[in-house]
Length: 313
Length: 313
Image 1 (tube, each protein chain N blue to C red):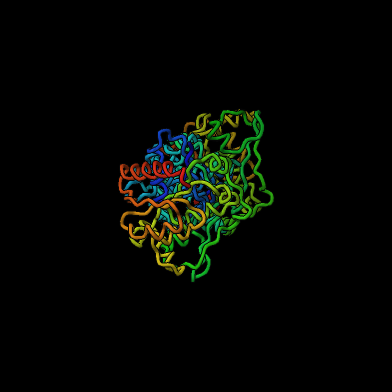
Image 2 (cartoon, chains in turn green, cyan; image 1 turned 90 degrees about the vertical axis):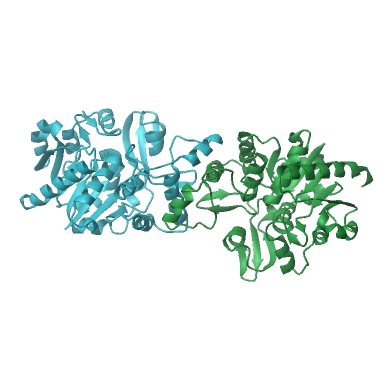
């Protein structure tokens, strides 16, 4: 009974934390995380999605922002600002420690997946967290202002340029990190977190071997679009700029051929029939993870439902 | 009337600050700083001597330690320790900002000297601070345990291995930073701060062109050895391990042929006659810079003395 969650971003981290708390044995969870957002800043390797997932699974996350750490301080960045340095990417003091030690270990030749495993241990995370790959596969955003590196688009430009497409640079030659394909092989359920389909989930699916490993599995996606808008971030704006009206059904259609299960928020209950043409199993429930209790409840319901429905696939 | 101070370490920084405060126009001071201590840690370029000099000239230094910044905090390193990272080189939060922004700018292709100039401006330093070179010339310490990188020897091993010699790797091909030779050319006095002769001053003198630029100038050295011991750090221990009894006179002898002036602490007044065989001009005074007032007084006395004695050289 192994569960794999594919995740990126704040919604993905919250959902993964819900699954971790809902499973009888949290060690039965592997979270495979997007690394397309990773970049180098101030000479440090920064992995925003991995860190958001880890901080959230460890209970160290900043509940106000969803990203960064609880009890964070900003001494370093304030002193950087005095020197005229860039402060568009906010690096808290506690968060910086993660980037420093990760960079040190990467430069000593250790693979990212091993570093993440040790960090998870240090932070007391019971689930397993894996970067989808140890290779650099940076997401490039094709916009009407040209191709932008992901964080340039996402944070520096506050996702305002119009999107025309995405490129996961080097994905075709990347290898999944040790454990990723094995976790998918033994999983009896794979859950696509309510993360951005274009820039959180797609870069995971782009690594050779991942899509193939999902074939024939119960694969459930939770919609990140509720009431026609993204719960957080640019997903709805991206759908629109790519010529698709954003909706839960549009997310399901985006995952056509990949998913057997789809979870809609109750706000979008009227789309259940449409979605059923794409995924045979549709769950309508409250997907808003506005508290630890609610993310636990959503994960528990989804897990029970996917497992109960398994025989009918 | 231009003054150049060659400096490295805490004693060098204090003396440079004294000269800056004693000169009628502090912009008439150029401090040429050792970069042999520089190293990369956590992926960041760290320049301990440059930073100690700049913090001290800006009045930002930690008066308790002599290195690092006043009002420093340790949030980042505490979080690094949780991850099992190395904490032998103590990087404060405010200090880290300097390393982050310097690393970012170096990686964008800017020379160290330009970065230091901008930092000095941001910190309101009236004097000019120049790294002796923009090239990497790391000091290697030859010990009875083999050759050690400087910070490995100095901080990690707390200067305990026995020293056999020093190597300034790449010095022969290094170029002085823009402004260094010009500052020396126009200087009417060059002052060797009471810094370690082997690992603070020698790496400056090792850069091609510096020694030649000193020829025929009034060059005054202040002894870093007082009462047979170093005021701070391993200078006396190094003299002993290299087979020389540490003393002010031994420092003067070390600088034979280079210096015209030598400043002894009053504790060592009995060595004045010996020193006079090496440098024609000898000043005996209180060299202990235990307060801002005392470092100002020492610098004022040395400046007046070197200028007054100029005609007799």
